[in-house]
Image (cartoon, rainbow, N blue to C red; front, side, top):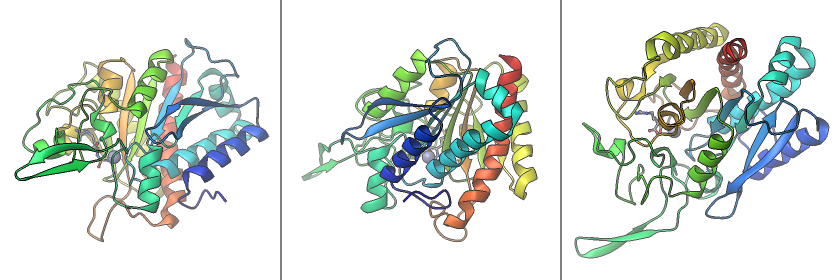
Length: 325
Ligand code: 0X9
Ligand code: ZN
C-alpha cells in the first residue's frame, strides 16, 4: 500500500487520494482532468474552497511528475497534500487560508511516463506518445514520447543557444522532443484547459534536480517578466529562506535560462507569459549536484525532509497569495 516515506506506484497514489477523500469529503474534491495516450486518468485533488468549482476564486496550482524519472516530485506533492489536509484541522491560520484560497494539486502530470520509469526504464523522461518514424541515413528510426515541458505554447519549438539539444528538439528520438505542434499532447492539453477554466494566482511545477527556484522566463537568457524584480524574485527569495531554515538546504534563485540553459515551451513560462498567472515558478528539488551518482535516484530517506522544507517555502507563497487576493 501507499506510504508517505516511499516512492509509490500510480495506483497507490490514486488510492491514497481516494482514501483521503472518503475521510474528509467536505475538504477534498477529486477532479478527472483528462486521459493520457495509454488511457490513464489525470487526477487533480482540490483541497479547500468548498466543494463547488468557483472559477473566480483565487487558488494555487501545484503539479509534479511532468518528467517521469523525477520521482521526488510526486512524492513531495503528496507530502504537501497530507500537510494541507492535516493542517486544516490543527492550524486555524491554514484553515482560514484554505477556505479562501484552495490548492489544486496534480501529483502525477505524466502518469504513463511515471509507470514506464517505475517498471521498464528508470531514466525515462517524456510521455509515452506512440512512436514516430523518420529516415536517418540508410535506415528508419522510430521513437516514442514528447517532453511535456517543451510542448506548451510559449515560444514553442523556438531555437535555443548554445545547446539546441537541451533547449528543445525536433527529433522524436531526443529527450527534449517538443512534439509535432504546441499542445499536441493529451497531458499538456488537459492542464491547459483546466488552468484556462480556473486560472490560479500561483502556479508551481515540481521537478528535480539542482536545488533551484526558477522564475520565468526560461526560453531566452536575460528575459524577464515586468514584475520580475518587484514581485517574483523577492517572493522566491523569501520562500527559499524559509526552506533553508528547516534543514539548511541552499537554493539558487533566478531564471532557468540564466542559471541552467535556454528551453522553450515550458509550462511555467506559459503560465506567466500567456495565462498571466501572477506568481509562476518551477522548483528543482534535491539533490544539488550529481557528484555522488545519479541525481534522479534520491534515497527514500530524503522524501520527508524534502517535503518538510519544500512545504515551508510553499507556505510562504500561499500566505502571500492569501494576503494579496
Ligand atoms: O529542462 C527542464 O524542463 C527543466 N529541468 S529538468 O532537469 N527537471 O528537466 C528545467 C526547465 C527550466 N527552464 C530552463 N532551464 N530554461
Ligand atoms: Zn524536470
